Image (cartoon, rainbow, N blue to C red):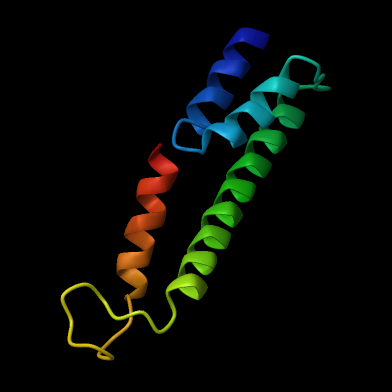
Length: 95
């Protein structure tokens, strides 16, 4: 049972940064869950936290690139779009 649960957690974390994987998987073996519902709630919390992390990264990238002209644009034209920033964040989360 514990092995299957760990595999599920690993699957949830497959696109997370390596430091996040280490954080969750490193402490997983020391965890005890009352029942399947307790474990399912934990997995749901991981999903929420990963979504929050992804949003935090996107916000940081947006702040860092505020006022920076998009590649190939005329000086002072437009800034990086949210869609482009999201694609950068998505690529980071895949690693």
